[in-house]
Image (tube, one colour):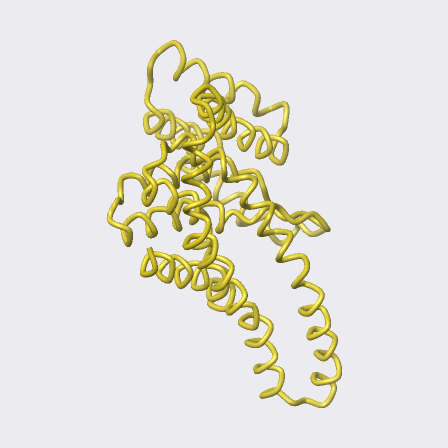
Length: 256
């Protein structure tokens, strides 16, 4: 368990810290993190399943204004690790995602106090034109939390695995079945949150079309996605050369 704990902690630090430093590639999302963790722990299939399930849960959970969503990276990584190392059902493991993400978010909010203090030095350094110090502060802001995150995830895997294992054995079977049922509902909540961001009444026919295709015609998710691509191409006029030329010619007047 020691090696797995160190491995999970290193992976979390990489996804949590270095993704922002490398330009925010969104590699910290569960759909990327879970398969990587599964591959390193020897169970890629479970990683893929966990990644798809947890990504659906956090799909509509984005930072808007002062709202900071639960930490999807820790939720995906720890749930995948628990599912593989302890042999948990994927449904029960997904049920732990939101509590884990919320707890790690609380730690991040406390650490934000130090980050805000460090940020206060930026205007003074910029006025002096000290580019090297500004670059050093940039890396410090991104990496000072790395030891904290490493210790947190290491302890969560090394010590938390025993607690999770005990909890699963102590909790009655019907409660675990309830967790599994709730886990199947959680992705729906994620899609509902996403729908609130992109909702327009003009899109409702396409929403019900996708529902009818999957529910009554048995079309797979991939099939619905391909149909959606065709509809987008036809609706947005990607194949209409005349419309494309007209848009380019009138581009200068769009600002007036």
